[in-house]
Image (cartoon, rainbow, N blue to C red; front, top):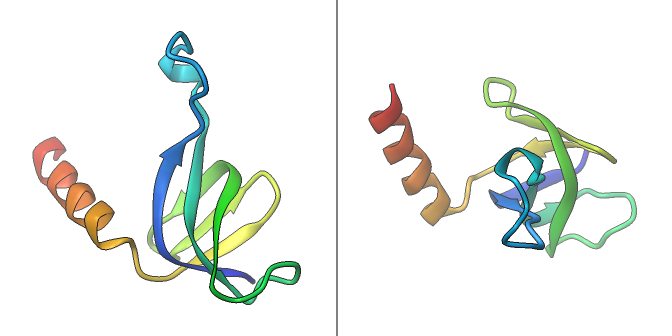
Length: 86
């Protein structure tokens, strides 16, 4: 299974007029152990279907990834977000 390191969630919003519920979420990060891509390549995945933070796995439209370390800035935002919303 390919692994993403220094990953974060990003959007694929192309237009400022896109409704929020129509904006696709994708992962971006450095990929390793992918059958088609070289180790260390920065990628943006296809649309995220599901993320399992307990298993540290993400399913996208085209692949399933093992999630390694989260991007440091994204991790700080994520931790702050969890505190504010729980």
